[in-house]
Amino acid sequence: MSETPLPLRREPSRPLDPADELLALHDTTPVARLDGRRRSAWLVTRHDHAREVLADAERFSNRAPDGDGRPGVIDEGFMLGMDPPEHTRLRRMLTGAFTVRRVRTLEPQIAAIVRDHLDAMAAAGPPADLVQAFALPVPSLVICELLGVPYADRADFQRRSRTVVDFSADRETQAANAAEMRAYMTGLVAAARKASGDDLLGALIREHGDDLTDGELAGLGNLLLLAGHETTANMLGLGTLTLLRNPDQLAAVRDDPAAVDGAVEELLRYLSIVAFGVAKHVTRDLTFHGQAMRAGDPVIVSLPAANRDPALAEEPGSLDVARAAGPHVAFGYGVHHCLGAPLARAEMRIAFPALLRRFPGLRLAVPPERVRYRGASVVYGVEELPVAW
Image (cartoon, rainbow, N blue to C red; front, side, top):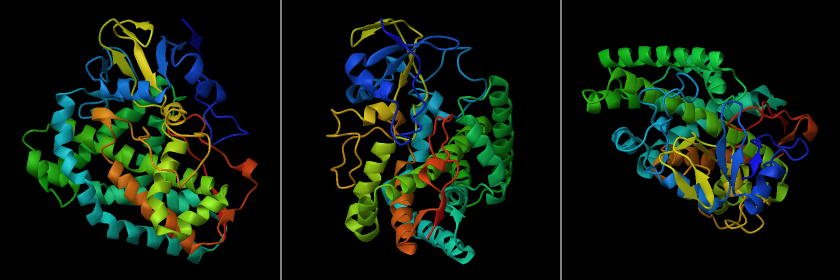
């Protein structure tokens, strides 16, 4: 049985690529044994194996055994820590808010938010930190308006979100952060119970209030708030940097509306900013592609490795926005496929070309080697992105 540390950090010389030792596992040990600080786990790197694990809630559970995992991070209503049928019950209540048809009705509002932030950037003049001026506030404002969270609270919830996805944070910090998240969202739920608005939280209370506890509503709200801005913000920042490093492909996104949808899918596949989802746990002793797993063993699916599998895409280490979109797993797969994927796609589809057309001379304002990356985060990205135009 091969053993390996968890190779999450990307090489400073190749910050857009997963670690070489992670990609090498495709051929050597696609289901590898990991050495952990507290316990061992399994790492899955091939695309077909990843989809198999993600789709099979009967053999690979999202619910951690008692005493496992970070304290308080997975709470009541936090669907990523649930299996069917509990997961199915809660997801069904949210599905209508994130259908492709429903998201299309939000696109004019998203476009207006994008336009307002581009106007503010233009008025302030270069240089600008694209993360703080554009990539972070756009999805934050969208999810706040959709969910019914005061945008004035963004500094606090953004800080808490960063802590949740920081795998270097200690357990005490995680627990304190989780308590803050619960208290904050519980307060919003209590206010919405008294006077529900036209937002998603209000709609959940009006339509399903008798079937949802306050704890479930708070857990759902925190999940949507976290996922609704953290991942899209990092995709907008890192995606823009990637296009700046590939000017011919940037031009296609800027100048050809027909290329935008495919470019978004390719950036999702190529960057795979989420290192892994919630760890699965084996529900019974079994053999998976030659490896004997014991009940309770954690299984980690590497989304970046799965999306760079040569079986998924020809020359997977190259960015090609004209590539025919394959079934990447950047949004996960199976019952836990990201509920907000249509919203994230719409935000990127609107934001990338709008940014590049408004500032056709957009460029880095610092040498590439001075760009700082979020190396200790489950959600990869840039700390800041100084740009000029």
